[in-house]
Image (cartoon, rainbow, N blue to C red):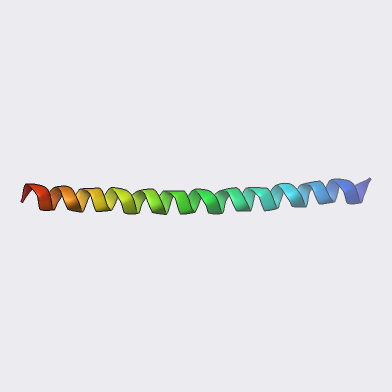
Length: 46
């Protein structure tokens, strides 16, 4: 019983870490895209 619950906890922790890594990648990608749009806009108007 104890080992089963422990495995479940470990699985949830690994899932949380994977999800957080994916979120970090998404945030960095979106920020890069936004920065690119901003720079292109500045070049457009100037």
